[in-house]
Amino acid sequence: MALTTTLSERIARISFSRTMEVAGKADQLRRQGEDVVDLGVGEPDFPTPDHIKEAAYEAIRSDFTRYTPAAGIPELRQAVCERHAADFGTSYSPAQCLITAGGKHAVYNFVETLVNPGDEVIIPAPYWVTYRDAVLLAGGQPVILPTDASDGFALRASAVQKRLSPRSRMLILNFPNNPSGALLNREEAARLVELAVEAGFWILADECYAQLVYDGKPFSIASSPGASRCVLVAGSLSKAYAMTGWRIGYGLGPETVIQGCIRLQSHSTSNPNSIAQKAALAALRGPQDCVAAMLSEYRRRRDYVVGRLRAMPGITVHEPGGAFYAFPKIAALLGHKGVSTSADFAERLLNEMRVACVPGEAFGVEGHVRLSFAASRQELERGLDRFEEFVARLWR
Ligand SMILES: Cc1ncc(COP(=O)(O)O)c(C=O)c1O
Image (cartoon, rainbow, N blue to C red):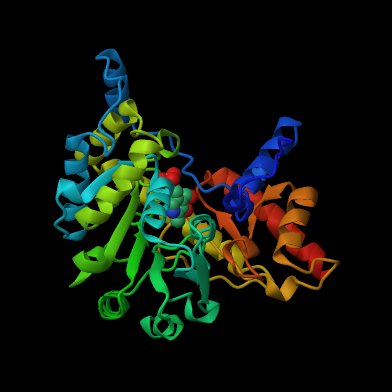
């Protein structure tokens, strides 16, 4: 029989990450010598703090360069539990923790481990692009639950309840939210946990931005009463410690589920990178003032970006409570000068003004675009000047 290049049904169900696609386009233009302001990319512009890099140099010098246990080195599993306890008041033990190749990999592991074909997974929109595809890859059925821009994209337990069915297996939460910056209110979190225990579904909480909260104390749904029975945490060092390229994240949850993830990991990545694990240990056990310093710079940038956007005609924006994205509503501009969707808007902004942003459609919400403020103040100024000019052109 002839060899065909037909991809497996699983891979045919998923698409390339839209945010990575935007990053690729911006990079291509830059390589051609174009002056692109990249507000599309979701990664800190800060270098990884020196004490973290030192730990990696030391790992190499001392030949810590071999395979590690599939679940990660025991001292890092312990350090993750201790940091989560210190930051959020939880009480996980190392057996309830595994180290992964980034937070994305923790999400993937949990979904693969728990979702069967035909299971429903509720995903509030706006959502981070990967959730849908991770669920589709597992053969699950994403059930998209829209939240309301006029309510600051808040998630209500009552709205989740209405979407439950006998096939509901999981709810994926992401607060602070990428792309909206919305936070989860503690009372709603407690109600969601009650609902999950009662109806029997898992809550997968993606806490990738949990340390990056501007107002009030960071909070984890894993600290709600009853959470140990139904909450899974996917965490990451990428954003809080400016470590995107190191690829270290973690999963926290009941030991049986964690064991399932470890089994999967033992046949996929084998283990997270040994050198990066030592660096992660230094990040979690070392001084935390680097996180606070980056956070206060992000806060200044947030205030600047929100102020600039609100001064533009036809644009409204909810103030992000965490993470480093603004998600302005551009719906009033659609229908002007041939721009009819957020994807048209983003494409024209890149082609005509050389500013990269991500269309809201990629997050399941039309009429918005996502601008990252993990860029220097100078780049933000240049990018927003061009954005403002583009908005003015559409109105002219
Ligand atoms: C909401 C959310 N979760 C998870 C991740 C993945 O982070 P990483 O795999 O680098 O830890 C990202 C990265 O952009 C994200 O925005």
